[in-house]
Image (tube, rainbow, N blue to C red):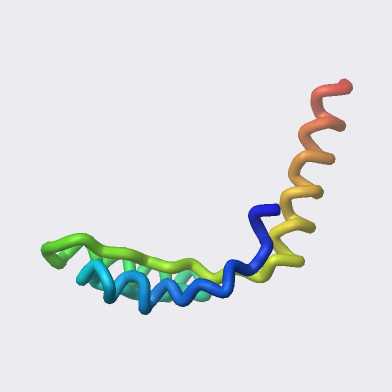
Length: 72
């Protein structure tokens, strides 16, 4: 399952490869991180933290809606 926590510290992994690291927990912090990344040189890594339960619920709702529309 892709939602299974890896217990991997992405920030430490980025540091091992000398990558510029940022984290985003909502749309606004992602937009800010992306803007910073696009305006800086070097390799950029943005870790996006999501609510696993909300993500699963939204995916199920999306595919349920697609199935309903396809059945029409």
